[in-house]
Length: 200
Image (tube, rainbow, N blue to C red):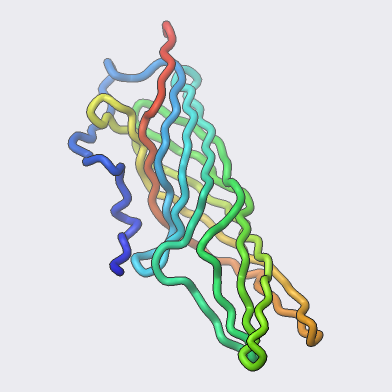
């Protein structure tokens, strides 16, 4: 199956028009934007749902990302008589805060994601579940657009992922993941779904 390149992430509807918001369309009030954030490459990437709550009067935003899942190839390792397979889903929520102007958007996106790594003993076939926590520290930087009258933010996300986990099996062995630190990058977008205007 061909995996979509996360660098091409875009709203599900065709992006017919994307221009910097002209002054007359500079929004006032508060709005909610929803989209996606993706990190990885075209063979394997992690995709989550992104929500942006924007206060255009104050020029501030809060961000939240949930429902992360792995698309494409799932990493597996075979060592010391065990094979290990990463799961396809992460639990947990990332959150952050930042600023928004007529043209620019930036926000942090941090937190802990959790998943289960499955260990299978190659000889006995026994299966063990190892809980793994991935600490995410990232920054989103992008631009603000007018997409057919709706506000759209879109840009890049960069940061570090730190994975940790351990499991002691009945044979007395302790199996560990990490701490492994990786630098990752990807793309994000979020489009207006709700707006409350003000008199400003």
